[in-house]
Image (cartoon, rainbow, N blue to C red; front, top):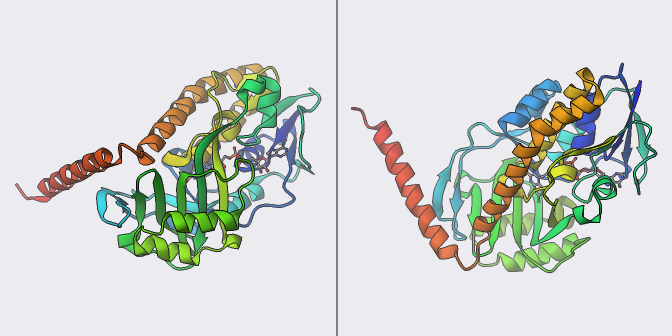
Length: 351
Ligand SMILES: Cc1cc2nc3c(=O)[nH]c(=O)nc-3n(C[C@H](O)[C@H](O)[C@H](O)COP(=O)(O)OP(=O)(O)OC[C@H]3O[C@@H](n4cnc5c(N)ncnc54)[C@H](O)[C@@H]3O)c2cc1C
């Protein structure tokens, strides 16, 4: 039996533990949280993540628990649509539901240790850094230069009661801020992102909600209505941090996955999806190949793809959160919107 220590029992750690063959690996998950979180917003599951969930045997349960993300729009702060967006059958699932289902897929042979890991465990087997953007494992194996980097933005988010109306769904792009509204399991998922000095380490949720209400006080009534329902117990607030670029995710007996490897800004909504794909890819390779070969193949399969997404997400963030370029950006978006709807109109016209 090969020993595997997984540092972090979030999406990455639980998904990997669920894939590793219990007949081949002696797995321990080290997780600092005493229990699974109960507050969390919706994560959209893109096709790659849905495939990974199917391999974990969880796709049907996710579909049953989640909400289908309908079409929406990129909107001005007033709510006026600039560009229509198709949901394309995307399934949204809240983080607590996803974690609960992943947790239920972990074999009973996996040991659970509830403590904060401060350094790499003694090198007896494979050490997996699944400990998120502030990864202790990444810092220990890749050095202090690989520490997480703060962005100037905070994210405040939550799920409030009541379904959103179709004409309010979408992402509102203002001057240096965004606000998202979408249906969620049992309510309306919302998120706000803007420049703020709060934090950087811990952000007080009540204070962040107050600042958010002030920040969005001239946005549409839909945005104000959502914020009026948000309370600290059903909201989250944090600074957005990213991982530095890495050219490989494995060093010796240490391997990274999920946010520990490639934490990106949330603008493409892909971090959790890519984390699931990492876990299924790494676990499946380790199950059938010798360790060194499996880690080499994992690097080949995942590094370039996720580093490109990390970059694309940050570029998308710069466009969405533009300040001085905002009028030009909105003008371009409206032109694209007109072009798309005239093409759709032509496509519907019978020959
Ligand atoms: C505002 C925001 C919105 C997002 N929206 C989306 C979205 O819509 N769609 C999407 O796909 N992704 C989204 N993401 C990204 C997604 O949240 C992450 O990519 C995902 O959570 C990564 O999972 P992970 O398991 O790698 O890390 P984490 O979720 O950070 O889990 C790490 C785990 O390790 C534990 N841990 C950390 N350090 C230690 C230690 N030293 N010892 C023991 N345990 C430790 C933590 O307690 C935690 O349980 C968003 C992120 C943010 C910030």
